[in-house]
Image 1: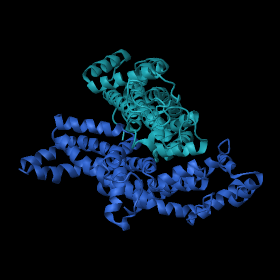
Image 2: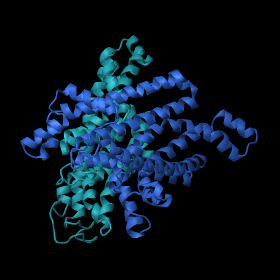
Image 3: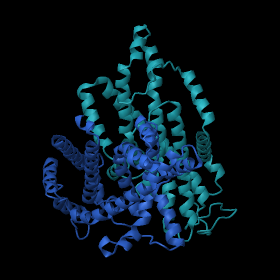
Image 4: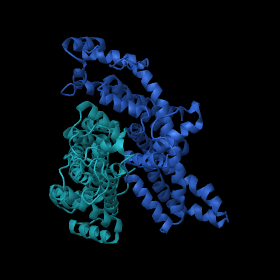
Length: 315
Length: 291
């Protein structure tokens, strides 16, 4: 197991190095020089040159890459090219808890809806319940997350005035305030994910329910409750765990868009603002951190799967 | 590897077509999906005839509610929402199909080259494809827009490059699988010409998973464009597209709910229909769901 973990970890580090290198060179080698375009707003030729020198853009590309990479290893992602030149690392460290809170809550809400929905539609196959679940699953998959966010604001913030339409409160200023601010964006992000998981649980559970060991368990005289929670569900969840990688993709992509609707300054808002302000150190840093979260959470899912199903480790 | 062949596969094109039609007859969702998609296609094509107003024409009737003159109301600049959504249909559907066409051509070429030549060509291409595969398409598209800049063409390029890995993987795995299939060997042993083997036995089996992937990709592309435009990273501000109309109306939804509801409804209906069609094709063409 230890060698498996080590192998997978090194693999993920290599992926991160490749991503960092790609992100660095793409911004500099693409025709039209994106960085020059970003700096074009900075002012006249002298300001441009000063800016170039300050950012180290007058040196050879390989040297720039070396310096940038060395700094990055030490946790220094450069600083914003505007105003007070806030270090990118600081911006990102402030943003991470917001994005993680949001994704985590979205995940919990999605699972709370998806697991019972999946069980209901599998045990009552082809009934009205099953069809209703399937209909809402299709709807959830087809709704753009930012539109769902707008609908939720119209209903719960503008009309009923139950919940705030924008903003974020840190969890140490009160659990309730934190929750109140995050619930709407979390629903907006979690819905599509919930739909996918409900559908997966349904099909996986149907397969398990028709298996031989379930027949044996039934003939032993186990209660329906024991059958479901003791035997069927744990086995049905294994394939569901494999798609958790997709879950992270959905939750992170969702957060990038939805944070912008609710003015929550998480990683997504930082990234999009960076692009709109043409602040390339911020864009570079945000893309790297989002990628790192993604790569290492995928690694975690794979390792978890290796624990659950030892056959995986052999490959 | 996805094994998409059935053991006694003799499905020549005519038979496949009849299977498509017979499953369609039983599939209400697919029928509804096709009907809605055709309606939107027609609405897009005939937008200039159907729209009562120029999509960018401002009137003094600002944020007017639903009326006979403006069935879906007007926005903060007095522009007719229905006309804007009709014109938006053109842009959104065009981007959806153009993006997938581009991704399909690039991706399938890469996949075929990798699978056919093998060796270091395969290794280089697949290393890159695997790298891209590890990231959400939308994040890749956002970064590519940051690099290339915004605008219609750049958005199409960004989204299609983000989709390339999906097609490349399918094309490569099908090339590898088909090379080893027994029925291909059988066809060869029976003395069929290469052309006949390829056209009648390889192609129908190779095309099915790509058709299914292309179909669902259209819906992802439409969602992707809408998200990018909504964030201000999409098409120019003067092009009416669903995502941009929503972004424009976002500040006024507390006073004019229609601005927040109808453009999103259009996106959802189109994406839902394509998902229904995709499900039907997946069953009818017997393609295993890819995880």
